Image (cartoon, rainbow, N blue to C red):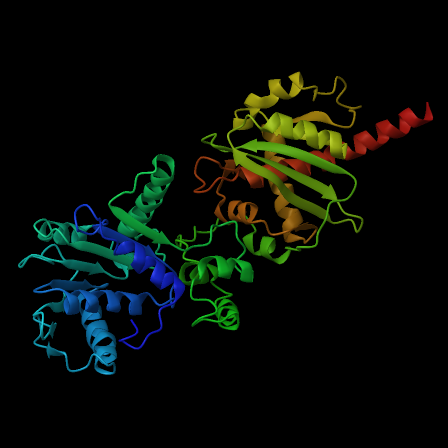
Length: 466
């Protein structure tokens, strides 16, 4: 890298040190495959170029092939970046260049090794045996055709390596997403067993629960930050992409960009975005509600509360895998907050299975519905759920509610689908592409608060008089 004019950054040294380890027992590379998933503009291209030049300069009769999104993109990078960098470095003059279309190659003088390019087709890699294959911009490859073309050409080469590299892709990046999942599984297996796989995998990315606008997040997933990239630059990129934050997430947080679901006309998504208020806090009168995902993999607890200014505070209290944690959590919340009520939907809703557990835990249905006590259980029937959905939509559109813009709750709002219920509509768990239990929970909590609060206040007043 230094010979090419680059000062290696620590992360680049780390990747190369590990990826090019030699097994002392065999004298061959420990890893026959190397995967690198890192955000854009972190120095990946310079590192790959150094890897390929090292191979053709230090080894005899090596066949190195580079592939990008298309053959045209590979040719552009080969000629406009790789070759120009080499010609401007102290390595100039040690190689000759063949630019004949279809036979492009950088041929090292002393070793007769060559660096060429290929197309993203089933025929790529066919021909001479392959010593080093590099698949760059892996996000653009929607299948494994290139890997399937490269791998057989490496079988007879004991020092062969397949490298792939890419920033995050999209839902259509099937091959990249599979490789990232496999890489993470290899790492988990390595930690569990202590055995090193033949695949080396490196990944820098920010999990979904890390805020995109926090410099701590950037330092976590941008290994070139402070070397060739500054925080001011990243902040500027965030501002420029404010209208499409998922594009920023993919480019600089190395997240997979997921297709935005089409909007449901009954869900006021624009209104939800307008009423976000990070400083919003609940008042003294709160109602909790529980909902469970359609597949029962997660459960959510939501809260609704009236603020001193009369606006409604909506918040996702918790969302965790499974349902066994729900009753203890609600019991503890009930002790801490003395809520107006705890709500859950029945009539076929997934959370209805928890009603008996609530009762067993002492959270009971009021014996007299007109005189409930604080903390009693509210069970929403079908017509109550339909009413709750319409009322929440009205509150959002009229600006009478606030939320703190929690990722999982906002995702539920953006992805929620509805279905007809008579002449009205209700939230549809089955056809929603995301878990909408967080939205259902705050919807039910709001309805329960507004219907129960007057009864509880009246009951409490009567009890204090007599």
